[in-house]
Image (cartoon, rainbow, N blue to C red):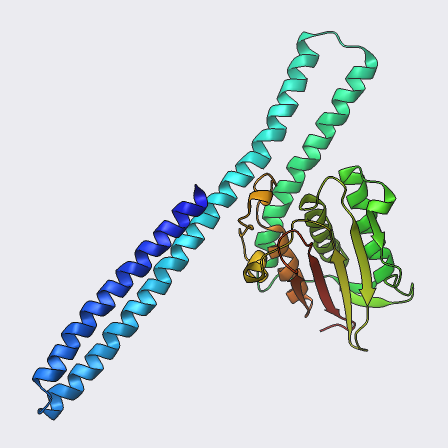
Length: 302
């Protein structure tokens, strides 16, 4: 329903813009025909016609962008509300159970573990929103230091395995993708760790029940390092490869409808990469054929 509503609104504004432009064209053409022998009215008519068409086109583009932005923000609010409400409801339920019922020690420990995981989920959502605001601040400082790429990536891989309860082979290096332990870059370790964790989390969330995430680090030249994360997930349509890095944007696909999230993960990844003088981009052969997300970073401080 959301997709149909979005398309209907966009179609309405585009149609309205075309109708107004057509009416302006008819009126301006009539003016030009009537005054074709008069140089000054003719020139004024042509200029006026150009301004009307340009104004209508710009107005239509603006309205379409506003419709998309508003719907992305609505989607973000709904997603964040769900991400906050679900763990809070779960924690409350377990606390009420502990308060009203006598449970044995083993079950009590299980309840504590579930509540701890829900608390971590809450913290992750809040930190994601706060970090999205922080990385877009132009004057936000970077705490740069020398970072061993292999150790940084390995820690992120271990974290995502633990978070999603995955075996080691589910998130692994490619045969030729293990970096030299001596390979280092300059950057903010916390921010780069966040970016890698977001990419890996996305790879797991948008993959089937048996995810196969492959990670590699390559040095295309002496000045850059590329960290690539490939999955066997739902893939991304070619027309959306750049859009997935926009704030609040989420892929509109039936297979992605059950995936929960705020639409901020890849936006934060790109913002962090740019703050380090690098870039982030996605590659996919299409729906159902997996995705590769690459974070390219300079080896020296920018």
